[in-house]
Length: 319
Image (cartoon, rainbow, N blue to C red):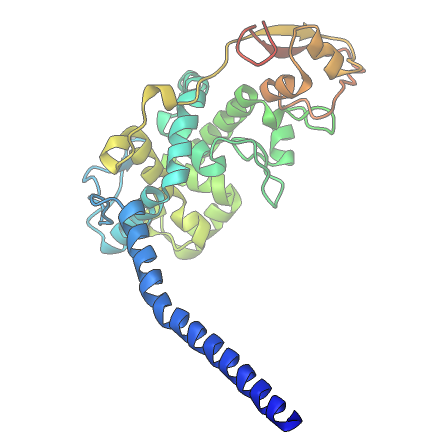
């Protein structure tokens, strides 16, 4: 009797295990069809019928600051094509540049014009920083990526408390002075742009070693070799966004918040307290005055500073 019970128990276990195995096999066999259906549904849902990746028609009259590009040279055309493709199909970045340009170009353009610097150099600032107050690994800072020594050479105040490389108007003035100086040296705005990226010493060295006089004849490193072409691609895309597939409505563009200036010539113990006087917070104060690097102002010399304050009604909490 005991033996019979054991046999029946073993048969029961066998049937249970067999049932589980067949169930699992059935699910495995069924899965590819399910996965395929999901994949097909995702394709239908996420990829528009009209979406196509194609080559880009390069304008036939490309120039930088009025200096024509030798587009009959196949090597030059390949380099141009690369930058147009990279910057056109990096859609999220291009959209952000279009939106930021609407906000910051009206500040940069009149300063360039006042100093006699071609308007195309506003696109150099885009190439340098994406119109953001970034800091490079080498320490270049702000929209114009100015090094500390260069900024001080051209009269900017740069220390732990105040860094005017973050002051867009003053930094643009410094960039203009630099560009005008080296355009006088090279007699070419294109070489001047290259020197802004690589350094004037490097460009002069390569011109001498390679015995050429033109940017387009120079063999340069990866970054500076692409630099002017990248600027021209950015210029074309930002000047004609619809042509390259960017449809941005006016309401979607970033806009500058109107401000007024408050003159300060004494130390400020707390910018948080200072901001509250104008019904804003420290974050908003810093947004409009990124050159103030600490939450206080030392100002032992009693220098006059102009601090920008936004008009009421633009930010949350202000009335």
